Image (cartoon, rainbow, N blue to C red):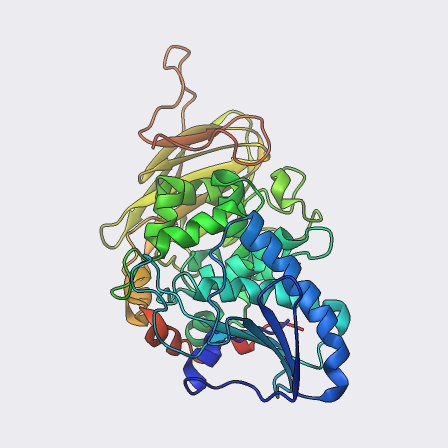
Length: 444
């Protein structure tokens, strides 16, 4: 699948639309299907049925703001020849439709390549329709992971029996956890020469949020986009503010997710992440034999990023101390995980009694992300930290010392998923224009 929503925001002239020789209107919704070749006229039945379904689910059931109609009062979809293939949703007006509704919204069109087979047209349209809703909510949001992650999650929200999230997207997201929840595939290529569909795989984070703070059927995505919306510029609230509003504490939410993602792709995966065992598994920085000493990441974590290691052969009931040191001050979280068990703490020290066998340990960069508001790449680069994780063996705890204690911790006992580990605790089209050719890269 190829989605080019952000790309076209930077490349198309204001008001540009694909050519059309005819159209067909929906009988039930304010939707028009336009076609560039007469031979495609009959395909409008498929297009209209798919967008009607997406409208009924994403707007009428989930509650996303409806797409803003253009001058003819309709949402226009275009079947046309696209030299790259794929699809996009694009707002060509560059203006806020209603300056008093608390949102930055404009009328978007959806364009889809006529060569896409009929069988998968509805899948594409469920995704692109969600982009049209995003254009109607906050076109000033320039963090691509929340655009593509939400639109990708909207595919199964629309019809879980027909549309599945592409596992290859999620695998890309799990392969580079050190990038965090702000970066994207273009940044990975430009900075690390890694080809990745990371921003689409960020649907894993959006699905986690929806199940942790929503109804598991899309209300979390709706509430997230409403929380990050604002009138005009500056881009405040930004996407991190939106995560904070949705969860009550974005850092605790990120720690919950950072622990939970170690279980994705295993028999201990949360119910919402029912992917085949062995797929969508997290990539550790390294697998090291116990005992070990200092661990230095091969790639240091960016703001909101995490690095993980697997410690092999840890003795049963071994007491472990983790200490993190960094080259400059910042906020950090530490975690360990094995199967259904695990714990996280906000801070730079964590002590625990390990179960025997192989053990995940990790560090999460919880610094406040300046990039989220500015969408300036130097801010994203500057958020990368240099850290070392020190692993120490401790003597067994005496019987009267009690359990581990630490401020603002999350723990996991025996339930699947994250369960009780909740702890105590750019702007506008100018921003999207800087994304270059990002969304030309979606897989077929």
